[in-house]
Image (tube, rainbow, N blue to C red; front, side, top):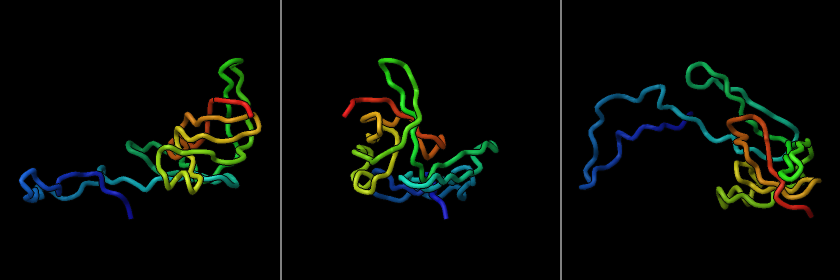
Length: 129
């Protein structure tokens, strides 16, 4: 099962339905979000547009944290997900997306990569505990 990203079946401004002028196309097919969570590392490779392979990160426990003051990058363990502004439900479930705030052994960090699309978690240090 997949998600369809076409819009030919939407309603008109008057409330009437648009007539389907063609069938669904394969390039309009999407997929469900990876919804990365904490745990033992798990990845899934899927074929993307043009034959490119995309790595979806399903579970991960490590993050590459950049310290903006010193410019150093360090691989550290994720302790917990503090906040995710993308979705209230993600916040409750501890899903990691771009912009999520996580607690690491180095301090608080904000995720700058897209784990469901990039296959890695990169973050920038925003505060020390």
